[in-house]
Image 1 (cartoon, helix red, strand yellow):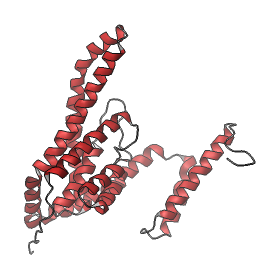
Image 2 (tube, helix red, strand yellow; image 1 turned 30 degrees about the vertical axis):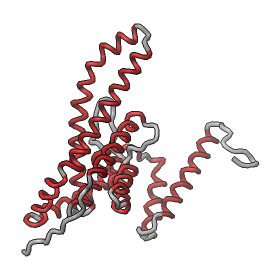
Image 3 (cartoon, rainbow, N blue to C red; image 1 turned 60 degrees about the vertical axis):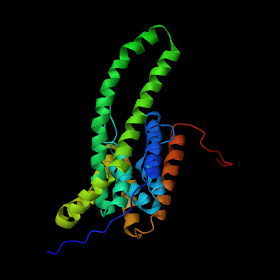
Image 4 (cartoon, rainbow, N blue to C red; image 1 turned 180 degrees about the vertical axis):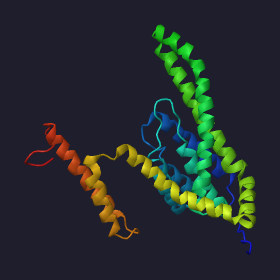
Length: 268
């Protein structure tokens, strides 16, 4: 079997590496506060792609990863694979190596697992804050508690910023060389990554359905399946609009069932 010809891809500049790292650190703060939901892959990947000059790749990667992480959420003290690092590195790998977006998704997911392990260690270290926090609470020292919260936020942001810079800029040549070796000598590995990347969104969505799917919601699933079957997948706007219509119907019907005045005869 002839070896594939490897084609070099873009080189990330120092400015781009720093900018991606700073943006990732800021987004990581929102992942704790959940104020704007910037931490979702559908936001992180396009922003990363925009910084690297390829919004199109960012949008495709964001769509894949949003489906993967739609059903992955931390419950109690559990920490799921990190969606922020997975989104950033999927776009970076797709831009700096010859990996397809699907293969980059499977590879980028590994960085999500890496950040999951690092976050577990960091959060375990935060146990040292328990005693000072108890002391501040006993004294009703709001400023002290606020200071501890900010220390934790800053440590978390630095954690993301440093790992992102090391992965995006400092290690890009090593990642490119590794991808080149796979591309030229072990193409079957990349084919496996592509297949895995294509399956991960389906697995993520299946996990979400396992939690959300109930008997009363089955008609929505059936209608959506039938609707999408007869519409070309290059135009999903009608399916999205149908979802909005169903959401509005459910909202109004729930309001009436609870006796709330969601709308009156003159309108909403």
